[in-house]
Image (cartoon, rainbow, N blue to C red; front, side, top):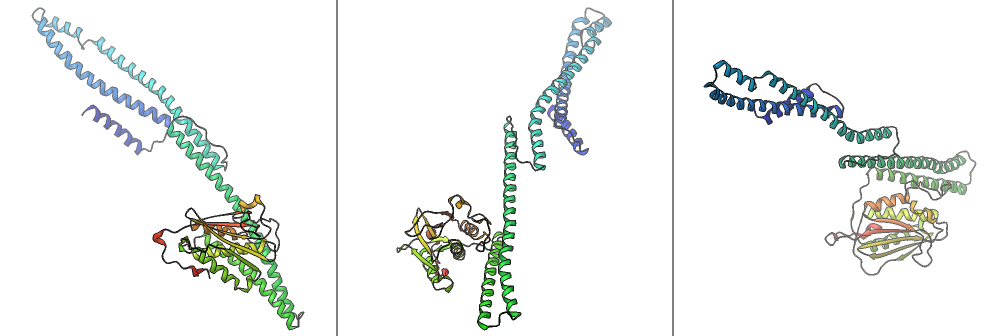
Length: 423
């Protein structure tokens, strides 16, 4: 068996025994044991090789001495002289053993010292990671791990800090989300209670005979029907939001002639009695523009939500709605702006947040705070972007402007356009 195979065999046996008995220990002790075993095995192999070489060498020397002294001394005297001069000398053997023992002890002590230094370097980042994990377990994500040393441990600590920061952001987001959800539930309860109370009052007045005249009964029933419509709209929005969050409403983009779609949309709204109080001003290009990538159903929901938001919060009569379209850099930008009172500039960035309402004090016109959030969600699903500002994009319009940017379709995808989906 060669020295390399012997070392490999011994190391394998130690590892097998360690695995068999499930030895658990610290990194420091494991490093020390491994280094010690490695040194002892190496010394043992060297010792075997050295003994064999010395034996061969001195056997040869003995023969030479016997040849030289045999002719001059008696047999016993020659044998005694040879023993005194070679490895058969007891003092020589004792000194060899002492030297070997001292060498082993020295190597073990040196190995222990180097192992301690190495383990300290290894244990420092591990202890920092252990402390960080304890803080995370206790819910404290604010203290990062500061470590400068080996590149591998720096990478691990950096990854841990990134994970900790992500957990902190998620916890803050969840806390904000939960607070907004609680406020939404309270607001929806308020919004549902008001029309429900009105409906019950109207029906009870008719059933109790308080209102007997047919004309008044009709007015009461019309008021109850109108209130039930408000409840239905609110519940429909909540149901749509729930399906959107759970992926129940897939967005399927296709090439769409946006200018033609918007013309059809405005024309269809003008014909509806419910939108008789809204004046649409279309600023659409006459020339044909390339199709955009959009989902017609999602786009209609976006337009409806923006229009509903303007009707609810613009605070002006009559309401005028600008629908403008312009092309730039392979994209088309749709601008929807009303002539209302607008939104404070410091709150513009938040109007697309989930459950957010500009006016935190609830009133009869307050909604769920989901309309513009759904707009942002659908725009992102179509690969577009949405933003808001208070700039005047047309004469006579200075209210809230919602800007929607959609990408133009590729040439090979410009088949199957259907602008009539906006009707």
